[in-house]
Image (cartoon, rainbow, N blue to C red):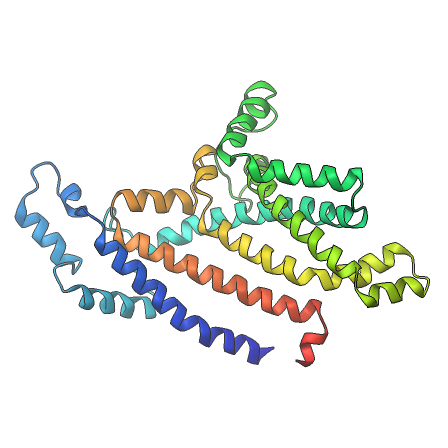
Length: 314
């Protein structure tokens, strides 16, 4: 297990370097100068020159990149050009918000998608299968922002069951946090549940046609035992892959959903940073997002070994 983690970390290092280089180059290629806005209406050339020198933007691009990379290696992502706050602190503030939303969304997605996919596979070409496929198609097709607005209109405005927007940390007020996460988690998790349902159904159908499943049935095992103890465990590998990638996408920030429900997560942070040409924040968020995806892939590899004993010996 440790050797597996070590190999993945070694592969991740050049990946992170290329991601940081790519993002840094694209940021510098964007039109516009952030200091023209920061300097105010008068735009005193001396003030702009002083700001550019302060943030080392008057150095050659190559020098800027390796200076920034040296800071990153030491755990310093620099400061926001807009507010002057440490980028790592800004990311840390928003990360807790996005993680809570991502976890809640994945609970909804797996809680709906996995059982629906199993039922659809077990009852192939029946009403249950067609219904699950139709609901999955609906979940894939409906825009998140529209569903979010409709939920706010019906659940919050008309029925007054849940708060319309906002965020509360689950560590501060668990009840208020859950109330504010239900609707955005359902909006995001409903769409992801459709992906999980379709992949679960496909993986289960393939496994249920396997020789060892037929052998288990021939031994007289009941269908629930065959499905839950034999088929499902082997069908989980592609589902784990999909789930970890979807969770990584949620960590990257569900921009539209966060905007609709006024959730101060990664989505709002990256949008504001792009519009303000806040180089340090954009680079820091993208780098942290890449690290998040790498960690999710590493988690998937570990779960493969735990779920499928044959991989342990390999």
